[in-house]
View 1 (cartoon, rainbow, N blue to C red):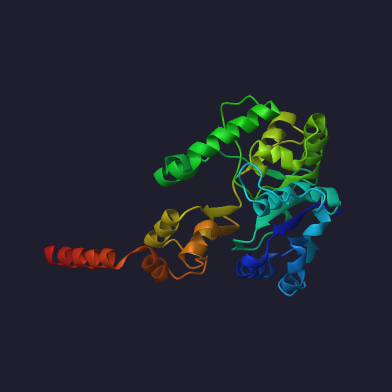
View 2 (tube, helix red, strand yellow):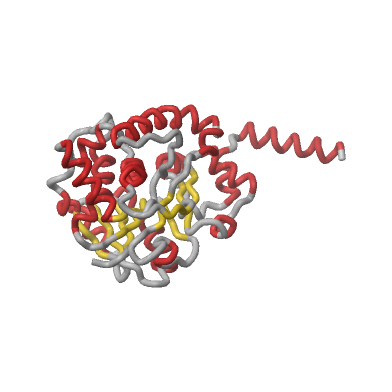
Length: 302
């Protein structure tokens, strides 16, 4: 068992994104940290070349006794199963601590174990209240209000009394010590599986974070997020309008995530999408024409 590694969960529909992610790992994994990729059994051959020389492919069937075939809490089985795999990966005995990374992420600069581990046995913990997302009217209306209700419910389930909602969306280093405590001291006491737990709220990282704050199974050493997450088309267009480049983002983060939930609907936008292409994607012809007219008028006024 190694002290730290990277876990990626993907499937064939995300193959192009996974190629970008593993290309960035190949370039920036300066300490050759171990990497594992879990995909459906039928996709193993497809991904073997993508991870060649930098990672090991593990078929989903390694977790088949824990996976579901029906929706959980109204969420499709594939999404729930990737959450279960992230929580259950420690049981394979491969890593004491591991960072689950989604295939729509890319690393932007070199990284090593010191970026993720506070000491030999204690990882950093990403905790924040996401106040900037509460301010975003689009995110607040579409996601935050419903998410807040579920997060409060998870807090109650684990017995954590805290006015704050300290958690993260993902890309948290998961400690096998904390996960073992979650299983033995919480799930087993209730006779729950991971799937049954996620029925109460399909946010696997919040179950981990709230249980850690409740149990104090390891010291909590807080660190800000590793990845800059672009949650929506509005946020992506803001970056393009302001001319914020990947080099700019790399000053503050190890990588970036252009959320695939919206990126695919806009033609597979990603971190290398040209600024002009991004702006053209979001601005309609009438909008472009009105901007051009406004610039001409402003020029004549000056």
